[in-house]
Image 1 (spheres, rainbow, N blue to C red):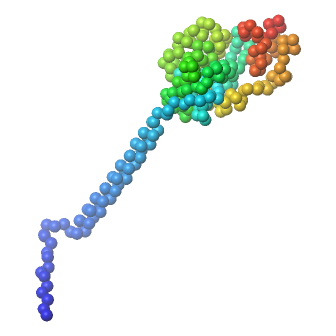
Image 2 (image 1 turned 90 degrees about the vertical axis):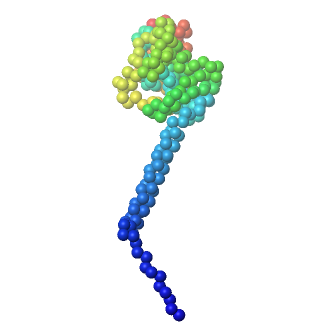
Amino acid sequence: MAFRLSPHRRRPRNAPPRRVVFATVAAAGALAALTAIKHADSFHEISLQNLASTKPAPITGVASIIDGDTIEVHGQRVRFNGIDAPESRQYCDDAKGFEYPCGRRSAEALDSFLAASRPVQCTFVTWDRYHRFVGDCRRADGTRVATWMVEHGQALDWPRYSHGAYAAQQAKAEAAKVGLWVGKFEPPWDWRASHSDGAAPSGQPLGIIGRKLVAQSGGLSCEPRRYCSQISSCEDAQWYLHNCSWGRKLDRDGDGVACETLC
């Protein structure tokens, strides 16, 4: 039986060599793969950016006081937008020129104010450089926290961020000589600049660091409590007034001078 071989097919003269074709196909495949990977990264980045830029929901709860312009609610630090309060370790001068812990006094005023109408609700504005939630906060009764703090002289309008939103409240506090305005003080932003170790925000709530002060200075101590009849000098009385939780009891008329019979 005879087999007939089919004639050999010749490639067209102008056809490119097979190696070139294979190389071209491989290069195209590699380019497609790289393009897909690049776009996948871009989509991933876009997704992350969208996630990072998502506006957090308002935070509502009972606040722990960090300082006069920062609270903590459900583990989230919240910085009040547009105001600045004295730092926790900052001291100011009262009407008589005596130093007092204005930072702690501001925090205590905030604590009393918020306790009167709970819970507090904070609406997100932005994130600050310490990764804190910066927001506008209100008490349960609707009173704006930042407005109250500035109006009562416990914090300052911070034009750099507020654009003067609380300038009117600050002018009112200054005219009435309430809070910080009763004496002399250094604006918190200037105090931080001159105390580099105090630039970072406080690390613990007021409830941990300041409820029961057992401070001592020159032999003075906040425990046990003392009455004017047990205090020997005006200077000592002023120290108790400004450094002890019960010190305000020594200033019955609220004029900033404790045990006036000694002064």
